[in-house]
Length: 320
Image (tube, rainbow, N blue to C red; front, side):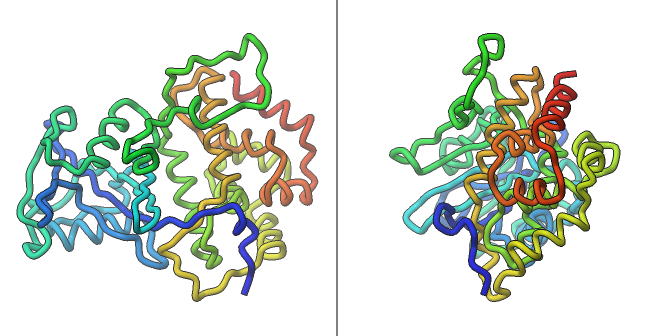
């Protein structure tokens, strides 16, 4: 059994896929659970299953509709804490599907209702309401259940404390950064890599593997190719340093390593610093490089990456 290298600092979460069905008039579909509260169609991600696959599966089981996984786009993320533990929810938006939504599970759902995000019914689950409000504002993450059951809307300023920045690099506190579609793809590929290796956590090594699998025309892939950091070389080092995990791990409980989370948070800071509205993969990679720690950085160093000159050149390219 391979020991989790982040086990002393990491935490476990159960992943959930929420399906956000949006009609042409902008209204979304809510389900009235037997508890009497309204929520979104949702389900737990099963072992070895992709988030989009879960959303498509649950949409068929609960509503009798067919959604192509390619039509599901990551729109928001929510981190929940309750007496039963912690959960991470991925809100996947779909604007087209086949079939008319119907209540397929009357034992668990009392009915369906279309509603506007800007005017949600009062009996909608609170974490759903606040997550959708944050999504509308462009805030990429909602945290619920941490401070007297209140949600903290997260912008980069609340989660990132840059080591140093000059006076001309000051960033407005109220700035919000939205996660780009490409970044959503990278995070999902990182999750797939963790599951493939039977790791119950997502670390910087999984992020690095995801970066190497990006399209060749992207800034990140061009930079990695320039540094001769390829998927094959990174995968060999990950297998050597970390190895294959225990196949008996419960992969419906993932561990999100703090360094990987910090890279995402600091990436938000860089995005705003460079005058961007979206968090892109290159911002996360730059955050990893400047941090200089973690397994992802260890692998890059072993592959001959020269941090100072190449990082400076990479950072300069992002300003343009």
